[in-house]
Image 1 (cartoon, rainbow, N blue to C red):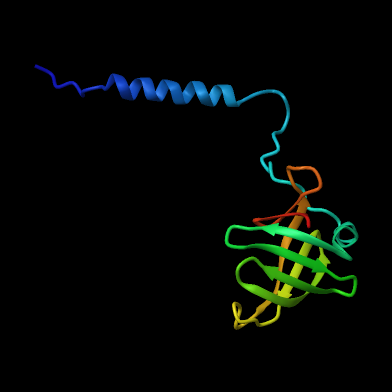
Image 2 (cartoon, one colour):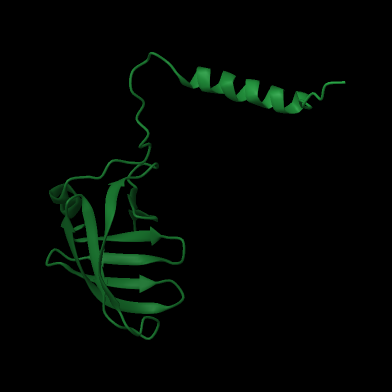
Length: 135
């Protein structure tokens, strides 16, 4: 009696489904843009949006308000933690910020840059993982 390998109907169905999905994913509609995130903005445009205005930020760890002065300084109030000063600039479609030491931020934060792009809501912007709205 010959030995036959066992075949699983579930495995065959799964393989067929995977092939069918792969076939559906192929189309002749041209290239697909896999970068579905917002496109970064020009540095001059970012500067004109932020300069002289206060913005509410909502991030994964903090919320608060930042006033971006035209001279590149900032005043930041983090909800429930306190205030600190900082510095900001734009470069290559990014907002770059540093923060001075404060009781809730003993070491301060060195200059860090994050992509700046239009947000999903009107008059909102996405800055790294934070969302900015007018304060």
